[in-house]
Length: 308
Image 1: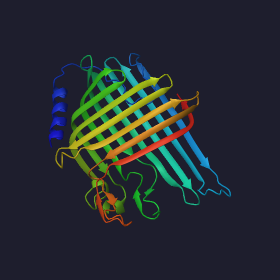
Image 2: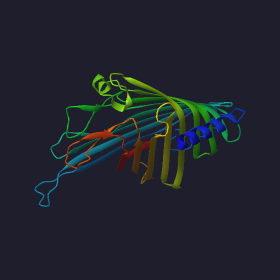
Image 3: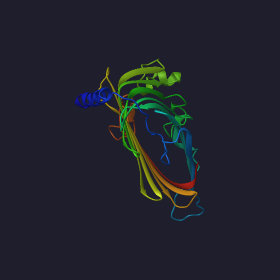
Image 4: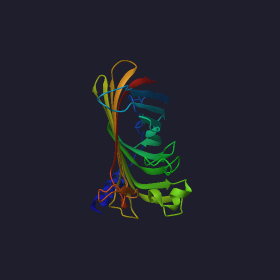
């Protein structure tokens, strides 16, 4: 509860002490800084395709062959005119893997769209409104069970709208604070909705929440060919267990080997008290209860990339 009150207090105080207006800086840029002093549209993007393959024939040491691929598309379009700036970012990721004779398994699947409109408030502060939409493209399964879906397109999907202030002391850092944020969770699959998946009431396909929201983004060039990007999202629902803060933290390290060859290392950490994960508390191979858990994913890859 103390963490929630602190989150709300900081958001409310900083959102009400600035009295002037100015543009927000671009926060959705995944590749390079945008020159916000130029008016009109500024666009950019990244296309990256990673691939790995292992083939074994009469291999005495044993093992299994494998095939894996991962696609990343990140696009941004920013518009500025006078004191206004409109920033838009779109990210799509998808990965597949096959090991031995098993069927293809999904390793990554996301659609993430962010749009933010802002106006300058002072040298480093900006009035801003933010809209974010996240979902996935294909069905997900709890392998080796390939029969019962545990997720799908728009199941879940998250729609978040926030009004607040954006603190931008430097071009590589942004801190967006919102004391008034609406979050809608969508589960557009009746079987999952009936089971109350992703926090919706059993039988309902959506859940609405109202609370405080913080988004911090950071980007830095560690070296000329190495870039680190990080984004942290925090949300607290004022009306239901506000002390249980939702966490969504993504990091991406890009190391450019040549103009078109890039090594990437990505991590994604999620904690949402409304998402119940199966737990084998007795270590007997059987799930005997469900509860919230920290979700973590990492992807290391090398492949072709092209920057717009």
